[in-house]
Image (cartoon, rainbow, N blue to C red; front, top):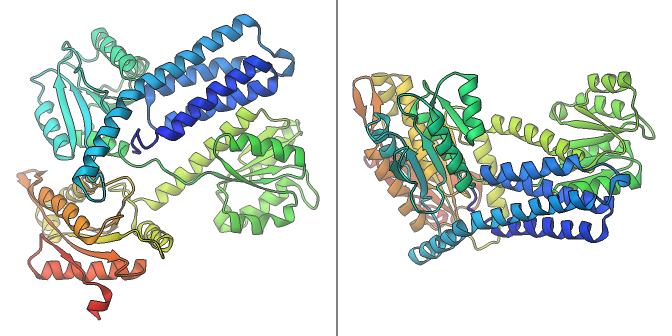
Length: 547
């Protein structure tokens, strides 16, 4: 997860934009300015969602719902003074809540960054400590093991009972709730509501939730973000927590606009740019295939009626090409006939929007479709067992990164890791235990490395790790700490516990100049580590030395 301090500037920009757009509307009162304010509010909502700040997100969504109810059209603006004052109070309350909630976290983040910079020549924040609050009865059998496991993976755990006051510290990343024997009763729901209100930046996880619609709805209403059923193991909790630490950074959304009206193009591009969405307009559908090939859009906004062919015909052509069979296509048209709309969707489209389109609705549809499209792509790039990048995706990211660093002074280190004697683990204890050993190493890497680093499952029990801005000595120090900790981690099986270790080979850029050179050199160093006795890290020599 991107640290709140690192995200301060763009979030500040969202807050300033919202306040300015509201002030513009209060001064001028036009529908156009209300649209701009609504778009700014929608952009803030999206940003809070990306930062995974659930309490603040809920408040922002509530204000957005009120605003959309007042949207209307040019004839309904300016709003009456009573509605305007009520809306203004909610805007001021939201801005105040967000700034108040994030100020302590930002201060703490700045202090931690200063300490990290003083401790490391590169200022690299290798470990990612996170605060976890564990609410449970003191004698609950899950508590000791769960707290120990969370601590091992880099979390700071504060334990207290349901009737105890919350720690007088900064908000935690997550509050974990384990219910008493009687389950989640009214008193527990009130405690959750209070924590939700007092700590809007935290995630609330409820464990041991029964399969009951009534109970789950009550927990969600009380502010829960995640509910895990009773039969789900505590290892599921760890996996979900580590997912929160992963970077949410992503390339800007790209939208290809196929539209022959310059006025419509201007409106669409302005609406999309408010949300940081990049767009490329083309007025002639004959350019469609070359445009998708060069621009690689995440979505196509397709006018229905254009010279040379209709939008439906253009979409049918796209669907003939394997690379674009799942690319979202949203039609834009003044066509209101239901039959025509249904037929257009049957012939390859994903949604139909009627012109003139509400800019807020347009942005919402575009973002939702792209997020689902990218999520589908993400599943194809990640390993199902560990959630890490798969072999091809990790290699692709490494190659792109190395290409971007050509001629740059930034160092880069690549490690190939392999679990020692893994075949004997599978043969002796079975594949489910072997899978858990693999998952444990994946989780340890997730928890100890930075969001900017690349971690992939290369195949079987082998992993690839790419450490940005890390010279060989720094990379070796970080990985050796992980190696030592992994060797002490107990893995449960039917007869007790076992321990495993890994070996690693390490190669660095620019000593090795391409992605393939780096992985081959690291792999050769990994073989040397195994020959030297395993459970160690070996550095590959610079290429000129090796030759």
